[in-house]
Amino acid sequence: MHTPPSQQAPAPAQPSTSINSSSSIPKPSARKKILGLLGGGLLMAIALIYSFPILYMVLSSFKREVDVAPPSLSFTPTLENYRAVIGPELVAHLGNSVGITLTTVVLTVVLGVPAAYSIVFGRLRNPIGRYNWYITTTLLPAVAVILPIYVILSRLGMLDSPIMMVLLYTSIGIPLMVWMAVTYMADIPQSIIEAAQLDGCTRVQAFRTVILPIVRGGILSTAMLVFIVTWNEFLVAISFTFTQSPTIPVYMNQYMTQQGLFWGKMSAVATIAVLVPVLLGFVAQRSLIKGLLSGAVKE
Image (cartoon, rainbow, N blue to C red; front, side):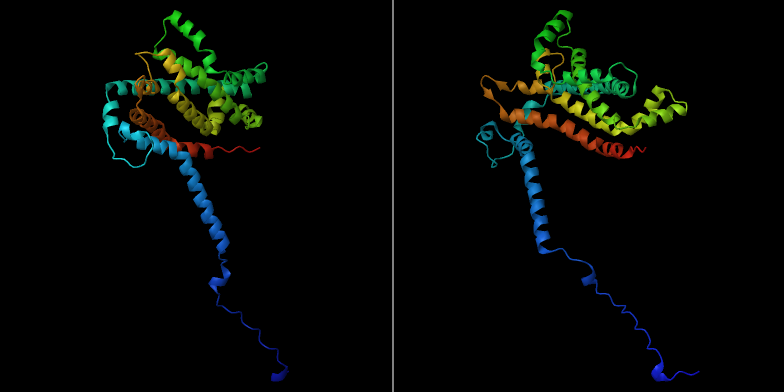
């Protein structure tokens, strides 16, 4: 039957295809913009305050001694401090620092990481007590053991020896490595080791193929921390070295004389000394981030 035009249902309205892009995307309010600018400015101010001593040290290295004190940002740059400090003696001290520090870091990792693994996953008697012993050694002030160690090393004929410095610094770095490595390994479930053993791995193989890839980022960051601590250490170096194995902090100390403090030359030496850890950090940054993000543990 034909439906009259008056009784036909009206055609549905077609939706509008035009979209107002300006109304669909919310705009940040002026208050949020202001808060964002204030937050960015506050962070920049904090970063500037935090890094100001280092920046001023670098600036002071380009000043004449008479311009360093009183402090001022207005001066004529000069290289006379670098000409005075750079020489065979500085190179020898830098060589000692590099050799002693790198050897210390290697020994710390080789000895400290297996010790942490044995504490967390081993079958030791009273592992918590052994762990606490490592931790308490970090609380011992170095000045309390300087005299007895000096007497022992003097009788053994090991004063002013690079080997002696490596042994002392390794004894300082191992507790730190054990402390941090135990923290990283404690987050790994025991089921990971059990699964590796079911696949035929020994404990040594499980440590090498399973645990190390998971905690390598943490081990690398702790190794960098040990490097910085060893590189900057002064008390042990000034107490037990003379002419054969002094490090870069000892070289800086010679510009603190009875005639006064040569701030410009000390700033130049400190700037050179800071460059090594900074460059190492830039070189290892990519590997460090990759190591920290590569490990994932799931139950």
